[in-house]
Length: 173
Image (cartoon, rainbow, N blue to C red; front, side, top):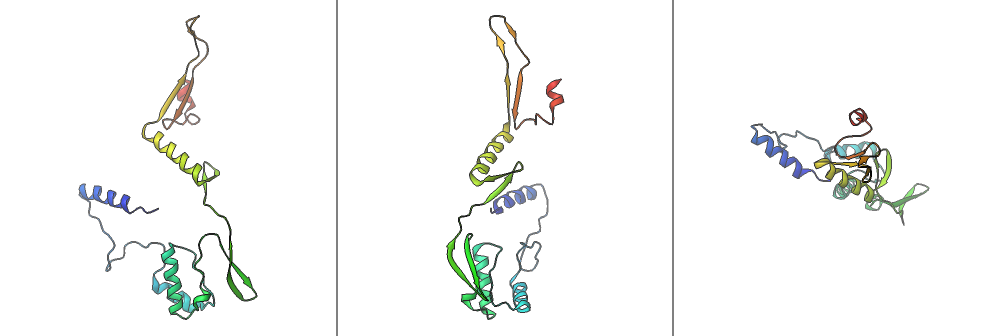
């Protein structure tokens, strides 16, 4: 996900508070993206001198540009594999090729110590975001209208307000 909008919002708020913000420019590189620059990639390709290349980290355009850079340094275009998730590269002896086969894949996430699919994660995160903004306290009281009294201790449920397990002492007092 792109966080540029959030960075701009935070930067504007900091400026409004009087902070001085230092940002990347062509002269001053303050932040590295985590991706190697072209000169680093060239050096790596020259040192390793691979017959085949499959860039594996970055946006699709980054992978393609890495492939173009490799071509400029002498790696044959048919030996460069810029693959989409799920595409299969096969080897026969010392030769590699795209098999044409595609494995069905989808992202998996760990949430609450469990492996969850994207749809379930999004619904959980959406619910938690709503609860974090306001929270909900639900109190269930077992009231007898005929006896005009509470029959047993109430049950208290919370979402986004207080963790019941960690704060049981507050609920029981």
